[in-house]
Image (cartoon, rainbow, N blue to C red; front, side):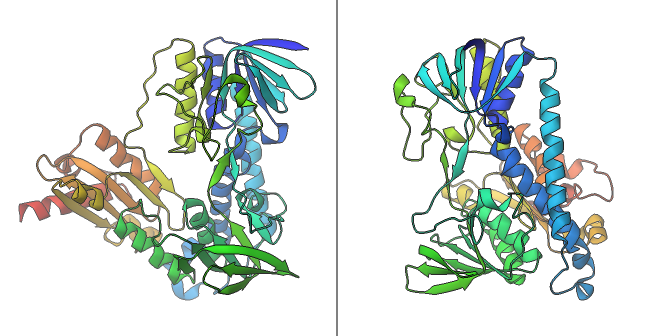
Length: 461
């Protein structure tokens, strides 16, 4: 059986789905190809949405926010209802799957369950014998957890990121947990586990915690996590791990052996491009399976585009959405703007972090004179109301024109209020602009006025 489409999309995550949606709204006939149980991609089924829903459930059932306001009354180990944790995550995923399906209603977009591989630059062969031909093909098949050769993942005692949001393990609470990988994902899960009363050890060969962060923010995060009992073994390389009854034994390169109840491997991810027969159409990938594209996300083959995590940095759901939109627009000749500059980053640790623009280290290395303004959440009435006495907003301005160059936030609503600074940066806003702005009172957004006034005061001294 053979079917003809204007666009065939391999993968239904943020990039693939939004490319299909964009083309469908143009009146194009579109096919989305993916495993049925993975409709919505890793972002919806195993990654961003389940993990953020789990984080919210952890905050709700642990009483974390209350413990900030009444630290003396907080139990040392919160009583957790595992079923409640899992139910909240599954309900969010169910609703998002329904919402994604609703968005495709009325469009000529067909979901084809299964896997596909290239026959030629306009043809895909699917499992079961169906052949798909299309004017354009978008590869948006996403990534999977890297398999460390010394860690036999069993999705029980030794888990990867895909394991931990599975239905069997959602809300699984262990007395001790080792997190291998101190990247964004590893630290997000380490933070959640620590709030649930688990003793967490984080292992990473790098000497610094999230080196792309502003140093002050990174130090603040480490202080928070250490205060909740998280131990960091930075600069340490794991050789392997094995299971002994209900324990996991970890071997480090320095000869040290650690014992824990569970291990979470949260290292880097590799692209799912190895099963596509890309060599058939003359495309190659790098050692992680990533595909090279131009600014419009077209590969070296004119009819084949690629978007999302498989094209590499920044590998964020937010940017993947835009990449899919831009790719589909370019295929069909619709003007579309996209800029890879000043991308906002949200890190959903506890406390959460938001950042956009330059850090002090970057400005210093480029010889740019700058001024810093800080608003501590303890200064804000809203901060007092919600009990966040340690969060902060840090703004960095260049001193000549007072233009905002960097925004760094840690604490409640950091990933939300970050966007005020992002838009200000995009419009070339200054410290005077923010200092003169009127924000609702009491709000967390008021931190911008306080931080801008702080920076202005330092310059005028």
